[in-house]
Length: 383
Image (cartoon, rainbow, N blue to C red; front, side, top):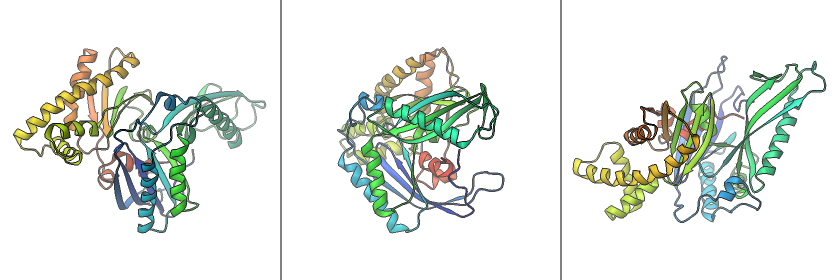
């Protein structure tokens, strides 16, 4: 897999994180990798945040996720306007850009894992990049055929086998059989077109690359971690993923998130949704006085019952007898106060103790508005 940043010069990046309640962007500069290939230093030049109000829009349909026939449901005009503003503000800040990296939250992508094994005509010849590219092209066509209302916008090789044995890279090896396992990221044509058209208007000719939340998490979470369910809490949805034996797979998405809770607080306290979101953040950070914290906590408990109702339905599909661990992540800064809710319900669900952790913020995340995914996009993106 080629690394995105291999030049011996600094790389200027526009990272764009499309979530369900806002779009976050960062203009960043990455220094070259060192001789050991370790991650290089980053500096964040400027960050932006654009609220999105998707209330009333159906964020997904089953046909879109499963890729049934048809053109796919078009995105609302607010996306086109928002993407134009993203690139206009970036151009007003800098005229020099080397690459645009776009991260997509659920439900703006679909991941498809496919594999293909071939029997080579000349087992003694060395495997070439051309052979690998031909297999990937066939797999991409299979993904298009299976989900013909969507477009492949990203891919990564997740496994390679020669004669049934795992290898890191097939190039240069000899062997009778070659198998490639690849993960493809698909999205609606309108999403791709809105992004590409906005980018071309302000940064014509610059490369743009797309990554799903799942792809970013694969780079953040250690593949050696214990089997875990990951809860990725966004504004309007909570995605669930299962990590096992180094593989991270999407298992479901509940239409309930941070903004869902904030709207309930807004209704109960008779305040705006913006004030309710601020109130919820202050509650999670422990900044409310005791009487107000009790009121918010009581309302949060009621909301959590509905939240758990959605989540447990997807847990049932895993059919696990036990769960060693769960992991919380998301785009909000303080997730630790939610640990008791998840731990209590998971231990009740499995009838046994379940360990838990929160993916911590690093210095880069703190410089990108405490957004773990925006930071991960800058630090780990490759193609």
